[in-house]
Amino acid sequence: MRRLPLLAAVLLLTGAAELPKDGPLPAARPERKVVEPVENKAAQRPQEDTEEQASCRAALGKAGAVFVEAPTVEDGQTCGMEHPVTLKALAGGIEVEPDATVRCETALQLARWVDGSVKPAIAAAMPQDAITGLTQASAYVCRNRNGAPEGKISEHAFGNAIDIAGFTLKSGKTLVIRPADRDATLEGAFQRAITEAACLYFTTVLDPGSDAAHQNHLHLDVKARRGGYRYCW
Image 1 (cartoon, helix red, strand yellow):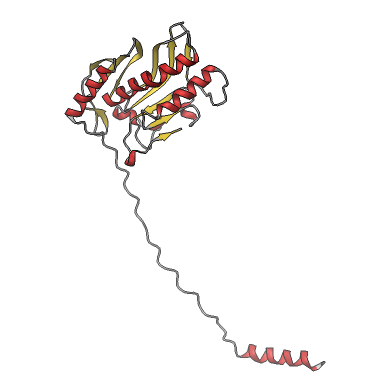
Image 2 (cartoon, rainbow, N blue to C red; image 1 turned 120 degrees about the horizontal axis):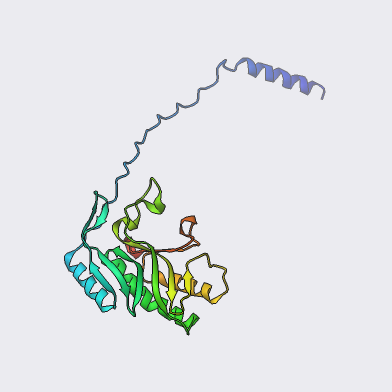
């Protein structure tokens, strides 16, 4: 039994003497492919069909909105609107403060949202009151999203978006858009109700809970997406 360790040592040394001085080399690393960055091309403003614009204006007038034709806006290759309107008031004498220059589709969806959702919500929350004014914080403006120096261009640059900062009531009270996710008051419930309903009319809805850039307004836009996808936060 004592001879077993000695035998094992002999076998180990014998085998080691036959090992090559250099081990096998690893397989060569494949040549790295350099992928050139894709050029970030500027978005082009949407083309506006004349017949669709006429139909939109007819619907906007039927919805009770007060508006005037605005001149074409040309802000380079990207920003601008071919056939904008300046929205002054909505059905029932609700003033848009200040006037908002946007594409007709944006104005039409705003009119439908206020008439179909905002008015019923205020009637349920504050039946003794009514909306007399809508305060908009931003309509058409040539800029990037959130006013950033770089990045994707904002839908405001196409007239597709409008930011709502608050509402004026018949009583003189002002309802301002603010973080209201945990506000158990009727004002908080009103804001949450109209925000959720806005996604029935607009393809993008951003509220004070979405990010730091929207703490005091609702961003509403009509950006067209594949498959009718809507982005609502």
